[in-house]
Length: 337
Image 1 (cartoon, one colour):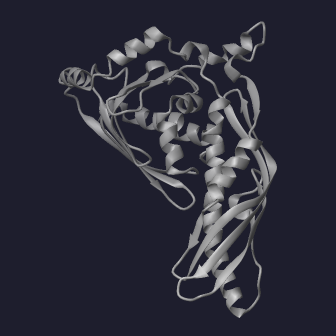
Image 2: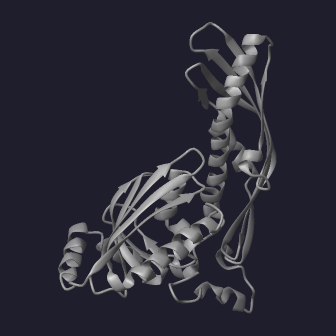
Image 3: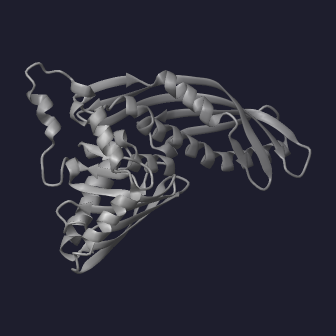
């Protein structure tokens, strides 16, 4: 998966006579165990389990045993993890004077098991009829919240920690002169005026795209995957330049896709002026991505207007194959369709 219609130029790694693992492209493995222990403690400590009857707080992680590794195999991220986690909690009835404390035990938490198969056991330090009722309330509500927090850890492992595993190749590390050149085109008004004047030359018919996609990640992780250069390079497997601010320019797939950001609301909205370089000179479509985080996934609502009519099918396939499918497969945001 490289430029649209072209092969991946980084496959020259296989042709190197010295067989060097340039910029971790060919293979690498990194131990994420220590990072994971701190991440899991930060995620769970202070987490709330609440409904209209109870207020429960996880006070501390008392046990976090296991290991985690992130692998890069020819640009594809593979994660391995296996954890046993114990936590202490305290809870009170919203209307009443009952105070309880106990533990939560998490077993079978590994990449080999689906999230719904992870064993979550709630234990109390006392017995009694009222205690059993509260235990059931905590178990029912806590089960959903804990699985969501476990999913948050897995997504962070794939996106946040993986930045150290997939490195930019030498040809896409911008030198000082390239950075200076990039900074000179950050003038939003000049760039917008140029595009507007050029687009006046295009008077052909246009069409639009609308779609809804679901990803196994948080809203934050999807937003970062669409705006952080290292992550974009990972799932596109190609060179890119990305300046994630309003008016900031982007060029993907070796310049075959280009444009600039018009609106960025972190973890919620991405708006772009977007074009293939083969489109009529200066003509940009408008892209809007609404990001909605749900309990066990993130849904995105995608809108694109102003697509040249004869480019509609090619554009649709490009988003599916080179964005959504690739993000799901390489970043681990869901099973391939």
